[in-house]
Length: 84
Image 1 (cartoon, rainbow, N blue to C red):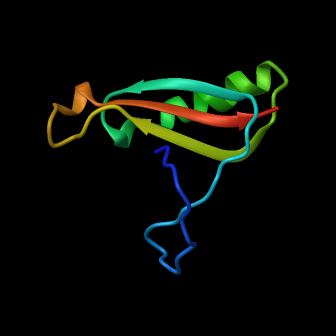
Image 2: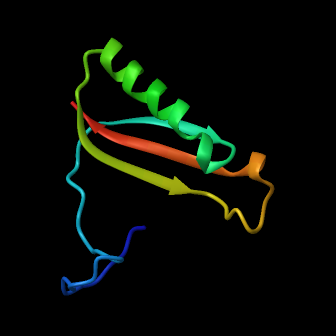
């Protein structure tokens, strides 16, 4: 979630504030329950390998709706991986 302003790093294990480095990202869109995301992670890593990109290990998920508000098959998630 993009935020603006200055934030102090806090000692909480639940919530951490950090800045992701810029760079090229590989993205895949997952539509369905979170429990089924692994198949799209496999596709993302496979696609990256086929194109010669190396995943740096930094992963970002963007959630477009909430599982309490939509049916499991309607959950929409974008998965980004920093790659170079």
